[in-house]
Length: 513
Image (cartoon, rainbow, N blue to C red; front, side, top):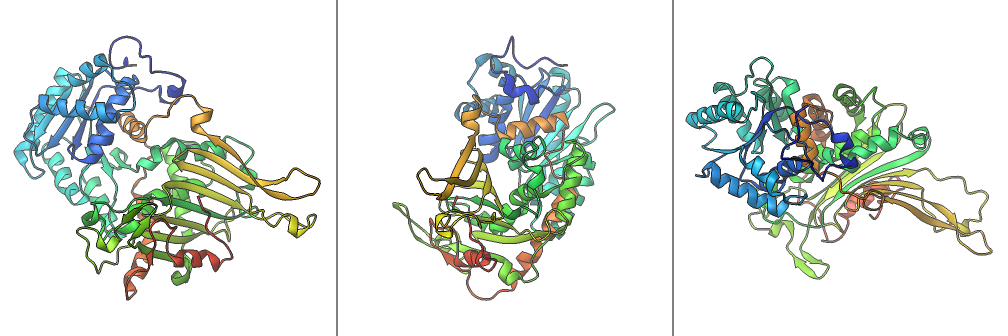
């Protein structure tokens, strides 16, 4: 096994890295779109943090590709600036100096043949100078409409074709298309150049420790699996709420909307992990098979008018701050029907979940920033208790907090101290920050490492992406058919009235996170 990057013992290595002890062999990472926010704030710091944790090999190289007229030395200075600002681990000069020796930059546009020829020459030089041994991953942190140009350039220049005992991989950021048809076209474009097992579709939510803990909680314990079914569970709520608006992203967001931006990928991934059957193993094939099975069995309500809801945030006061409405944001079309809030109801047609609704919602300018999965259980019989003594008690619930304050809480009824038999809700809480003394690796650290290792369980393959669009497309088509303006909701609230009505028709209410 290759030694970790940097000299000597790495004091940051600890028991928290027990699951990350595999170190990839020699390789290079080439980032397209390296001047964008994702690269600056997440990818470049994640590369340094992996090196600092001792999880990169000595034979590692980082290459940026972009339009800026930078030398490799100037690009290295940019990387250093972002590392110092955004890295999660302490700065260590020895680690940085070793990493810096393998940093390169190639200037050019995506349609520039000469630029890709220079990139190919740079890669060959790195194989000789850094010992990357022909193993290279191409990270496309670029708009989807550029995927075809870049992948074809990688093919034309020979960069996509590894020699014997070498590998080449491509990493794609969401969105994976904007509907089923475009997703299929995108898959065909990428997989015409790279084989399916060399395509890594990143959803950063799948790199979060709490998301992966869904699998551990469900399948490493005997406590939950016997009641993880329709006999005991009344319904499931999956929420991803933001307290900010589109804030300068109006041009991107208009025409995309909350459902395409969040439900199609993040929330349906959380849904699949919550609803899937136990896999044979955590190997990529087995885990993906179970996720795809549950997505295949998923359906929308027959009457979409009562089973989905959407809205746009209005202007007004959010706390002590006055904010603009969505249609008032700079660059927005005042006639836009793009939603900033979306909620949908899903059912899974199998024995485990027969009749159990899953409610998924996401929105901007809501009450607070939170992502959670709430498993709400059926009420126990209260025949032993006077109704007046249990009137304040709600349903038992298991809540998985993905962000912030990552952890799990359990809500159940307990006797109030005193002479009477009064029962009210109490909560037991587990928090990552309290239970474990050290921070988890950031999501992009885990996902980048998995790419370099060629370990794909956390990355959806093309069938999973297409099944997700098959679920969402009818909702988008239904909304496109509606006339008139989109319902408005107050900033700082929890969405439009239609979302509350959606659950009220079923005799249920949304949780207040």
